[in-house]
Image (cartoon, rainbow over all chains, first blue to last red; front, side):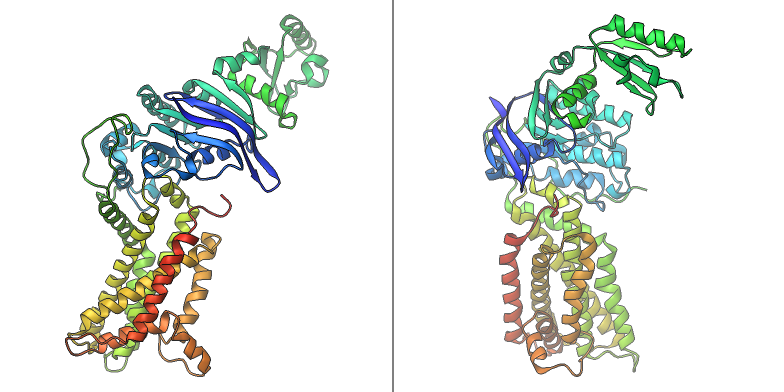
Length: 304
Length: 274
């Protein structure tokens, strides 16, 4: 049975079409990442599925119910982490988790949640005194305290340092291993690659890709050549096939090509002529990020 | 430095399977839900310095200023200070807090939980009334013990009714008004603009001269003057029977009922831009 079923979903804000004819389903136990640039419709999709917004057209069913009309029992089966932190700064961490635990029929014990979010040592600290990353972990704790069947995570690790992000990933992986369905939005492709069984890409309110991370990666099948550029490198003299990939401001050259030998030949010739050392040169398959960016350039030319 | 932690939810329950996987599981009933919400909101109010300043420090300071002649405070002045503290908590602190919680996304987060819609508002209103009553009790005690205000032993019940109904009326109106305030930054000035003129014209700090008759009449129908009158009468009661004018209580009850009916319909759980 599908945990989420979306058919021909659309949503307008006045003249702006935030979502256009979006259809997808999420099977129970699946972890699905919703990707897309800012304004692509990710949060609108999440908010319709969470019951905050009504669609302008189409249907959305979550755990068998229409989110906007679903009742308390339905809300006890979902968990969510909103895009922005939404906590009372005056409460301690343990008070906030305990308060939310009291809303659900079979909550996780508070101590277990504090361990999962790695804040057991801060149980008695007021939330307002925590760092931004720690507050985000409290948000995640409140999202999981009710043992949700379906967890919505809207950019859950934004603002976390790399170590805290990995900790959050481990927590989420623990939940998904236990069968929790997860729908998450993220701007971190590494996060999608690590957590998601499946990736949906929204661009301009339309669903432009739907598949496993490796399938999406294979769509941008061209080999990627990457090399850091030293300051002042004469990029204007690069062969035409390479020039478009130069980013002198960012200090790097990234070229996607099916003609690897010719591209490398041109690059090495240019480097020899201008005595540029190609230290850090990488040639390899596209990453999920490469494929994602290529997809966006294809679908939303202005994004490039 | 860790803060003392209060158990806000019910006692921890034994582990169980995820909801929906072993048949229907029961949600907490209305009374435990309301009790937890009231405890939660009382904790927030207790940790809010504005509530302490508005509800206790300011009325007591004004009592001290009033009592310069012979160290005694007349009952009418005590009633004004009591009502000031109670209504500052019930209206300003309550409504500013609601707008701030809405802007911070706290209300939006609550709306997605199994908490019934009425649960949050009822918890917040109950806690506000309790805190307002506590503020009133402290001011009366300071007035009686520190400034020899002549308050009869029959005052307690009448005071409880007058202050309870007054606090509920102001809190209900504050909940409705909060729906029209666009941002947390605008909350304090807009709420102050709607509060202080009414309270000053109603005589919370003493009778104001030169007020047109129609305006004085109007004040009798807004919640300020009836709260002050009801509390003045309650404080002055000397017998065992509370003596609070029915007209004042009826006006306060009407504002409370109107506010409570309108609040759930007008209440906004998310900032306007969200």
